[in-house]
Amino acid sequence: GAPWGSSAWHCSLSASCECEFWPDLTGLECDLALRLVGQPLARQLVVRGLREFVQDPDPAKPLVLSFHGWTGTGKTFLSSLLVQHLFRTGLQTAYVHRFSPLVHFPHAEHLEQYKDDLRSWIQGNLTRCSRSLFLFDEMDDLHPGLIDVILPFLGSSWVVFGTNYRKAIFVFISNTGAEQINRIALDLWRARRDREEVGLQDLEPAILEAVSKNPQSGFWKSGIIEQHLIDIFVPFLPLKRHHVKQCVVNEMASQGLLPRPEVVDGVADSFSYFPKEEKIFSSTGCKTVASRIPFFL
Ligand SMILES: Nc1ncnc2c1ncn2[C@@H]1O[C@H](COP(=O)(O)OP(=O)(O)OP(=O)(O)O)[C@@H](O)[C@H]1O
Ligand SMILES: [Mg+2]
Image: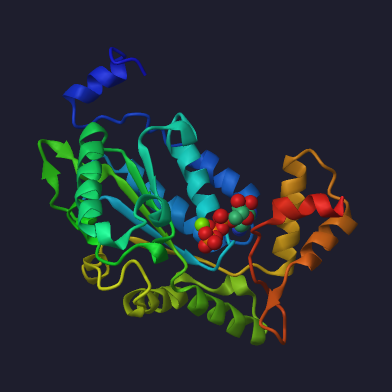
């Protein structure tokens, strides 16, 4: 907005500045129910966590979410739907900061520089807008040791210059824990139970263990884990063939195409499934659905 706009004026004076933060959680819930396939647990955890957080005028700490799961299961997809429903200008907002290690922190030898840059970037943006959202995608590619510079912003004590840093939202996304989640889903399938019977209480310990023990995880030896600063671990379950079909139907509908059964089946059959014997879960989730459809039209 214009610098003399009432919101900018308000923001320059007040720590309770809400910037473009305009959460529409009912809209988010509906959108997720319609578009996020096969992840009811992730959907519930995210919506419930956000609802509690945004209703609290004076939260005790920032909201810290960590998404875990196999490739193509909807982690990045969910994060972008979230942004669209939290900020008035959606993905255009200047108050969402998305980091991707290979793009923003590609050279291990510049670690110290990256640390300084990241710390001041976060501090500067939180001073500008306490309702900022910081998204760290592909955490597994992040150099361990970098993420701890944001530690002071995640706890409960960080109030500086009268700015309430505790209103910020941090989202981490990684594949760490995916094998463990898949294993639990497979065990359920082998026990002839529905994969959606699984609850966070079954998955969280497995994710936590993977995150703390995997040297490839960006959280390796991180104080974020040791100090229990993650509020919600959000597991993404591996997707089955019928979920892939649902993704194809959704994608075709969004392109204004009539989802004919032979196209839907053709695309779903073109994916590979694991484990080798039973072929239950899609090896790449719903990733590349959109680019495969034209070959079957
Ligand atoms: N659960 C899902 N429901 C609907 N569409 C999905 C789902 N999962 C993946 N997709 C589709 O596949 C695309 C890729 O998914 P996404 O980028 O979210 O995967 P990811 O979980 O972030 O994988 P990676 O770990 O490889 O980054 C999405 O843009 C979306 O079109
Ligand atoms: Mg992703």
